[in-house]
Length: 113
Image: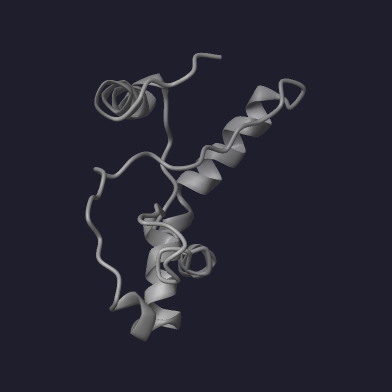
């Protein structure tokens, strides 16, 4: 909205809110232009505390990973809106590390924790 209202020259978002904005405010969205889009990145992770038994955490992970295979699961995912959950490991998250490295080199350096 800040871009549309002229409060800022540019803004950023991710697909789900941008698609919702386009549906809810098509007249306003049509006046905006996507100038740059990143490659898709892995999204939020589901994590468990270290006091949750590993077997239980594994069962939850498997249930989430197969949610898209049933009609009830598809209905749950559609309300989020997500197509599915995917199991991840360090290799899957490497795309984030690569993105941050490229961002740091081409946009601005990032603070290290």
